[in-house]
Length: 409
Ligand code: PMP
Image (tube, rainbow, N blue to C red; front, top):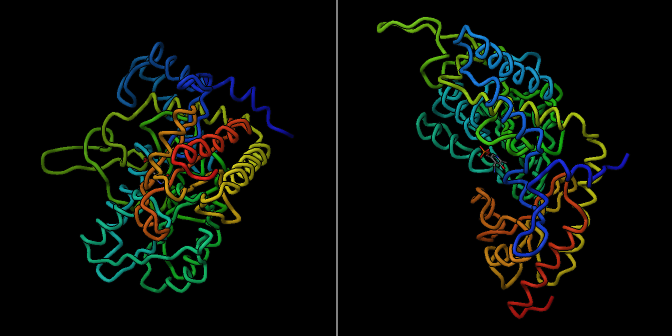
């Protein structure tokens, strides 16, 4: 089945606009996707009809809000193959999910001399919390390298696993290279050494159907806004027995059973990790995004995205002086590139003048930029609603930038 891209686009009001007099080509989906109208409407409906705080009220609106919030939890659990909604902790996003694991499970289980194994392609969200933890407890960060094509060097990864490895924390899909990591294989290797595994799923949700049971990992971190949902909501999935034994994160309302000035008894998971009023509207909007995604044929999405990736790689690859960073075989539709003689930020600004929205910078992956030997790249990242015309606009914009810099294009 082929994807009806124009019907898909019609669901996204933000896509139908001009920027600087040109049709918008929104190619910054790895930073955040656009949201379908159904998500915006679900949020508006909640605020207009059901708005109330959750878990505390006895009145009708509070009951409706609580039901919708908990239904969103169940929907996400089912979407990623969790055994129970109790394995889903709502947080602000991937960053908070990883910080939660570092601050609770990490503080309890990682000690002086232990090792945390990361890779060269990690986002700062999957580096900084571990660096902070390692500094606090005296643990060591070990880094598995990538190959020249941007794929993880699996042999080197295997060689860096040891009896001291307590945790492997790795991205499912690299935001800066597009590389899709073989997370099942990586998890199996880590488990052979008795290590726990955290997967940073920020970039995976819009393109893959991650199944935490099939992966076999212990933690999976997500952000709704990277997969057609609202800002300010994400989730940590963790195996129930791990969550049940994890000490609390932040303290406050919602996460307690009883409180006195002398002693606090904490609530059970997942509520033990959700102190304070949660992002109720965000969870409801996320559920609407999952409903919208459930109508997609993911095989057709994959085929379309791979065709866009191939077309973009070919069109950009044909430009003299342009280097694509990340050409691994298993790739999400993300193309990071540099052009000799043009700074990535200039490329981004000139592309914007052509209505083409890309990201330029270090993509919160400074160690990776260092490994690639560049200060920054320009990055075009596609979603299922992008078109081949937009690929052409991207390539034309890059050629125009090169002409401005008097470079052959
Ligand atoms: N990991 C990866 C691979 C990402 O691409 C991002 C977002 N750029 C994050 C983590 C952090 O996600 P968030 O900002 O939504 O917390």
